[in-house]
Length: 300
Image (tube, rainbow, N blue to C red; front, side, top):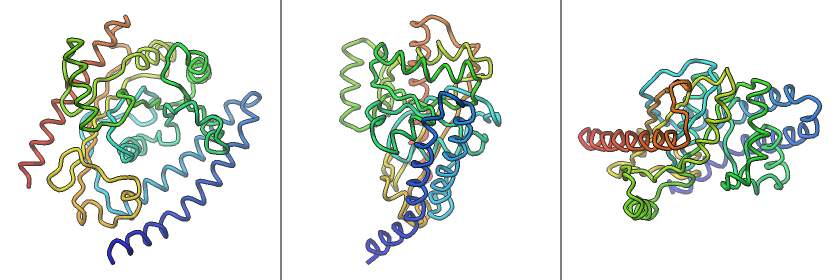
């Protein structure tokens, strides 16, 4: 009976948000034709619409469903534009990043790397396009034109932005971790703990372009950790985040995001050095995750 009730409860909670999401996608799609003649107005309006959608679902997760998100590390300045990198475990990663963006007054300014195939999806894809989301195929030479379009708004028009990417390019799973282990051994690379090895080309391209934007001040390195009862790196799926009441105190899920801020001017300048810099962050993230796993085990 509890499963039936939770599913019904989730449907009742989410239905108004889904309706608003549909309306927001239509509104964003209607803005798309005006991007050429009024790009700043479209960017600001789309940011306001996105804020309303993301704030609502964050409210469902944290307030209605009782998710306790622990935040640690560097305090992120309010209103600062930045490049944001993070590890990727599950859908719930978006809540972790949005929790920080909300506190930094940048929630509506978040822009995520998305798959280019979404561009042709009516309303959803059109809306992402109107917002200025970078839509890429992960073939960075092929994506150069798309990236130039995105970076032009940030650099040339000084749009306030958190440009967010999951540097591993895919979600962590034990199977993918074993593939990472074999790749690191074959290519003589250090193996990060609890993480996949990061892909560097997108990060290098982003840093190279956004160094030209004087208002983009830093790189934020976010490390996301979960635990469900005794299982580390176990996170709720999308539907569980929307339906489960007391998801932390009642269902035993733990959520933690650790932030580190690196001034952009202090990053190295060559591609090889930037790749090494990102690799080193992933080694440090792995050490932090390993310590968090031990801390949570000790607190049982």
